[in-house]
Each structure stands twice: as structure tokens, then as C-alpha cells.
Length: 126
Image 1 (cartoon, rainbow, N blue to C red):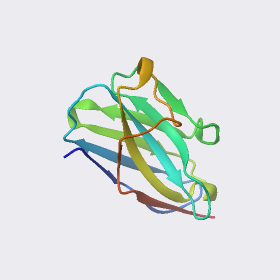
Image 2 (tube, rainbow, N blue to C red):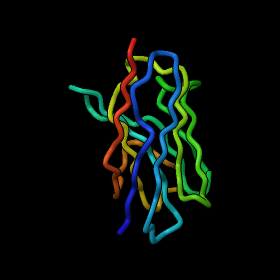
Image 3 (cartoon, one colour):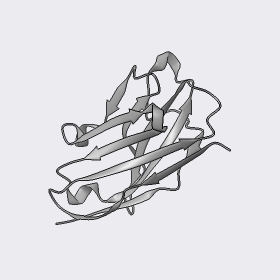
Image 4 (cartoon, one colour):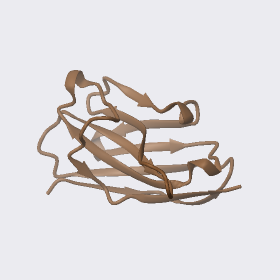
């Protein structure tokens, strides 16, 4: 089965850092993109960052630019989200999701993602 498993969430204070991991397994294709999304209580899910499997594109939402960094370790089938200078408004459940054969190799937040992880909770206290 194709699976994504997130880890690395937790409770931190504002200004601190966390690194989220998304481990991929059972992927039948090597052309895909991985996106990180988050959903805060009472809010809609939003795209945070994404990367495609061939490192052709990386995308960040404006609110995390300069603070978050997405990277991939293809040998470990893992995508990371390094989150620095965390703010209380970053508090949310973070999900990784996979889109197979992203058009033009460009990852995006607003297209259908076939596989989703279970999520990991990030809580940032003031």
C-alpha cells in the first residue's frame, strides 16, 4: 500500500524550531510531488510548502517564507519540513500529501493529492 507517515510534531515556544518528517512507502511511481498542508482549529486547510520528486520545483506559502524549508532525502524516502522561528499562528495539524505525475513537474497546493498522511500536531505557545 502507498503510505505517508508524518512525525516530528510537538509543543514548542514561539521562536523555537521543529523538523517534521514525512516517510513515503509503497510508491509505485517515481514522478510525484509531496506537499505539506496544515489545518488549524476552526480554519480551512492550507498549503504550506511542496516539492516534487525530481527537485524541479519548490513552493512556499507567503506566511512561512524565510522561516520554513522543505527538503527531500530520496535515499531515505523522506521529505522534511524544517520550521524555524515558529509563531503561535503556526499551530495546526500538519499533513503531508502526495500528488502523482504533477503537470510539468511543478508542485501545487490546489490540485488533487491522491495520498494523505495521518497528520502530526504542532502547538506553538506564546
